[in-house]
Length: 71
Image (cartoon, rainbow, N blue to C red; front, side, top):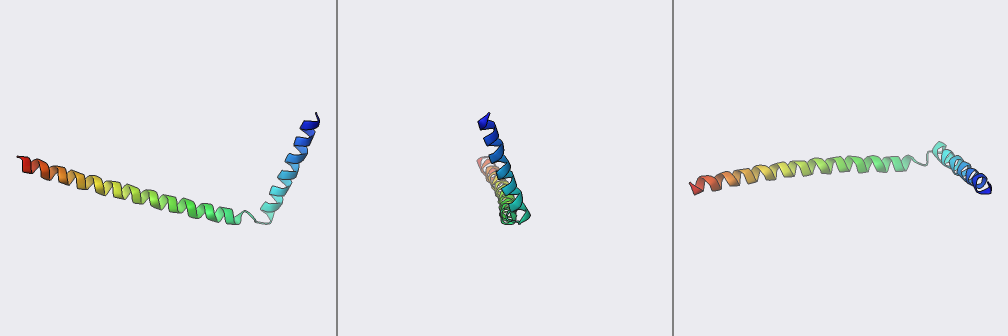
């Protein structure tokens, strides 16, 4: 029973501190960093998709050339 009460007290204190930090807008920098990370990840993913598409087209052209040379 003591452990449950202690856990409730600690959880309440942590919840209060997090709420106070949120009211003071101390999590703004975390949000900004997350937004930058997500936008950079999206851009990098688009770049990888474009590079993959270009490479596939190049290989298709090379294969076509090799087939026509072989005939």
